[in-house]
Picture 1 (cartoon, rainbow, N blue to C red):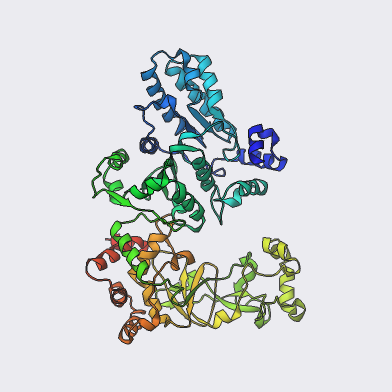
Picture 2 (cartoon, rainbow, N blue to C red):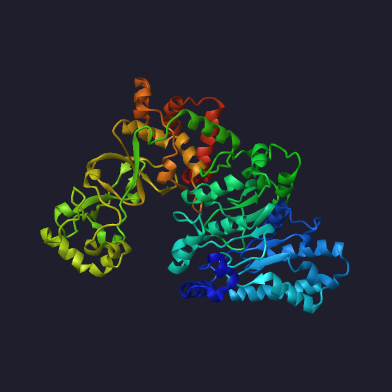
Length: 590
């Protein structure tokens, strides 16, 4: 039914959806996720996609799903016109010959109008008459939402830079409409993931997609359905990680990547014979992007510069494109050892309250009964030497059995909550909970405060793993690890080691400035032997290493535990050192 309404046009959309689209279209550049691409990046994507003027482009179809200021559209049209005028020197039939060659979509009316004006001038400068230029602009350009509008055919090429919009910025009716249409709108997926899905579905057999966008979907949980979709019916032919390289006309927080995806006519044949060609970081630092493109397209690429990674049978698992020796080592460890949780270690996250300014305050000053508060440890309390508690506490609205505390039984607690009722009751979790309006987003388990656990901050300049001997409850920016089997001091050494840092660095998406994220999904990727298989002497060595400041002393027993030796130890240390911001900065200081 959605496809029927698409073909009937915007007038047939539900009023709430139409209103949401008008709201999105009227937002500013940053709010609507518009990021403009540098010309050299556009040229590389067009080259890698095969959209070059030596091809009969006027007989092919190109789609630009979010053309903005025309960063991709105008260079692509220039290539199209060059190819066309070489084949047809007299453009008197230009409209008839070219009307199906391009479709380009933009939701923002002002961007649409400005680009249309530049496009018309481009066509006239190429020798087309004004009437044909106007007609082609009308045929090519669509002012609408790419994810909802109809198309009359499939495309040989889809290129562009899809918008960066988080789910929480999308009006609810529009988000609901997207959920009914797209399988990749999963977890906290950004809008660009849906642009991938629809663009891939619009490709012809042997068609090509060339995008530059955030690289998070390659590893993150929310990218799983998109990775599975590509694995099952497409082939990622080329990949350039633009981390640390300028790709846009303004600074962005996300690290981008260029991805070239083809839709082979025979996916099984393509899977059997194809790998992904990857430009490594050294390549990007030592040669211009245009030269990188040529190296990736070479019949026999120079192996020192161009990597090759097989993604066959990966499904929705994270895609890694780091140093190939690193990947070989990771794959070996993954084939030989269980995961952290399979080795009887549990990973959790601290409490999110939904209103920290009310639920968190100085522990001694919180005017509630003793049973209704817990000492809270936060990321800023952790140091290399241990926990330096700043004295914060968190309200605990839960009884040990999981029931919400009865406010009548705790008058001081009830009075404090009533004093802040407007802020507490306005939370989303409160509006869903009715009489339980004072619950925290996450349930609090008081016994966790008394349990021995390792604490790891989400974002940190280096691997920080601190042992809490059962005194504090963790805040939501801390992950914790417990185990009834592993000695936590020995585990602390393993998690501080270069091997664990290398694993997290391989799987995580980095924050601006290169900071690693030690989130649960990445910690669970760490491999760990079963404790009963660790010899007593090595157990003692691991425990002794847990408190060492020198990284070499921490690594030595861990390398023995994993059977890493020789050149592999140098590789692991190099990768771990490069991944830790604090380590890099300290070495850079004179």
